[in-house]
Image (cartoon, rainbow, N blue to C red):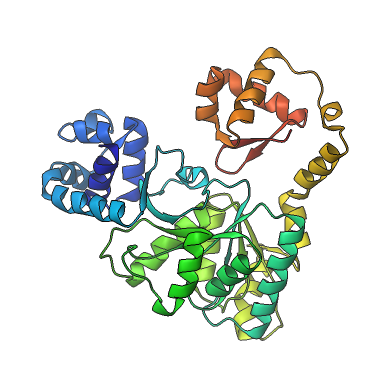
Length: 372
């Protein structure tokens, strides 16, 4: 019922993303929203007239929503609501996050580390070499990474293919429904990604890849990721839009420099010059900048059998938090509060203490990771 109600809600109000997300969070579920659709201002007093009127028309889209869910079930597509644990928690923190995603594949969308690799559709030999070297080196120094991109021509498809070749799970975020694939020439790679990652979209079946959808798609690419990496870009391009979105979400942005005067390095060079992205020249640069190398150092210490000496004695509440994360790691603070039975106001202080002791680490999207 919740999935159906979420689908109805997104279908009715698909052009009011930020307002819809706020309403959903205040109500707690799509079902609660639909139950109050005739008096929605009791939940969101400043709801727009367009939103109020749209919600009163739920029955008109119900047959289409039911047909969509039937198709999803037949084709192993997973509709993931925002309050589902499978939903990307990093994306959930973004004001304009979609209430419902459609996922085909086996990727853990809340992987310990996530990044996206983006850039021009006219990827040069230089860009291809950067991607190949970066992904291969990343596999050696930080193998636990989920790589996002947009399955488009150029940088996107090369990033996906190199990820697959190096054993990374990789997800393509689409600008259309999962009943088709654009570009069609990428079908073979997409099929491999479903077995080693997946395809992700906010769009129902029969949604065409119109220009507006690609811009909307970029926010999901940025929102699902700890960091955005721009490989090549002209002075203007979709990759720069994604970088801007990532910065607005408080995420890290990196760019590889290129030759002065090179058409598809101009965007990267300008972004670095204007402090819109940090300059990197290797995966080592990137991993150090993200602090992901600290996890590796801890793993090495554990192999030597000295991990417990790294941690001081813990209080009873700290032990409770550690046990909760031990059972289900990378929890968002609200979920951790429930599982540890500690109010958020007090849990914040407990988590800070654990961070200072090197026991947990705060991650993007309000999640906490147990380092032990």
